[in-house]
Length: 240
Image 1: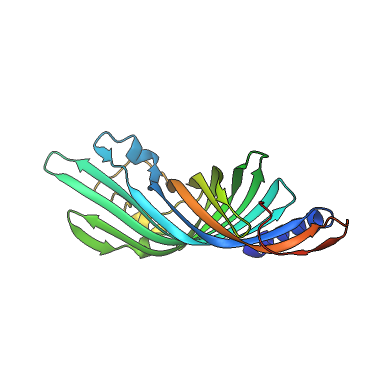
Image 2: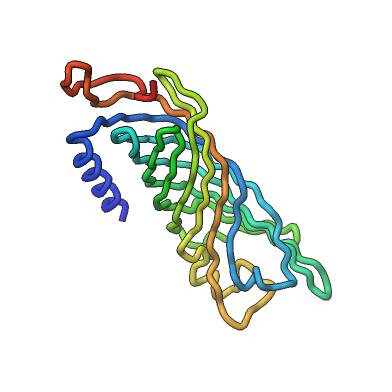
């Protein structure tokens, strides 16, 4: 799958670059916002209360801009996520906190408007590094009950905050939803992510994120048409 994405982007870059200017950027990115998971059984269970949970992600970005309107971003971010639940039982209340860490690899297409705003969409592959669950203040390593990776869709909006001949600063919001079930077969058999109760049928668990992020990019350079009409190598950022 990863090789297929890389080949697709390479072909798009080559085809578009024959006539349009190409510009390469590298930089850093960080985002913070709401994280958790969606499980239909738990959502519909009136004995469960959900809490809003924060999560951080940070890492690097490589961006290739094609002409004035199109761009492709590859991002590698280390992310933390959590979901807090409270289960009200006749005998006692149970606190359930699931925390996990991932390395997220994004492949995003961006469309830039003339005003500097952008729309982005693409897949995200999450490699799971750590999964821990706290039940009644008892912390356990439950990574063996969850998948090693999962695939999500990412959708976002953003725009430019500032820019010079060297760097650009961008701000954006992003929504993410995992298509794949986070719980593996062993986790299903033990009733995760809520092993203290049971339901008539199984429903999958889908990680979700809704975050706001800041991105600082440095212009490496690119190929553009000079005033003489010839295409030549230029350095810095194209946002001047």
